[in-house]
Image 1 (cartoon, rainbow, N blue to C red):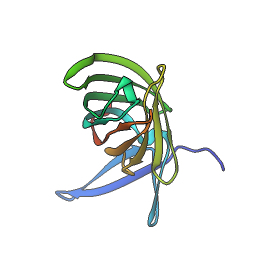
Image 2: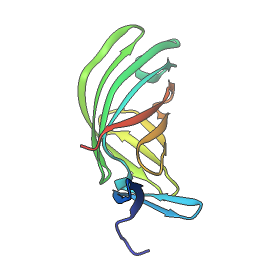
Image 3: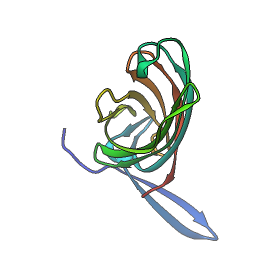
Length: 155
């Protein structure tokens, strides 16, 4: 398949003047929108609450967990997470920065892996316009969280 940048052009009318907005990373082929790495670009805010089940994050019994922060996607399969994480009401990480890598499939599914030892991984379901995505933890075993992250900035 030939590599090319996908563009979506949205045309609207305001007071009789045509306005054009161009969004990289999106193509609409009829009823089947397509995504690529550039679909996710910018800063995405998230907050999640779940339960860490053994052996996730050293839990020995089901333990409430919370995380909040933002992910900065570079549009090329790399990014940076800034996160605060608590386990059982104890802050374990506070405003920690960690690199991540991600994939995006044409059907707007993908994955994200935090690139630190024993870092978590997530499955992603991406809005075709890149404004938000839903994620669910896939690793480590026992990490039981999901959330919806929303883009708050394109930078």
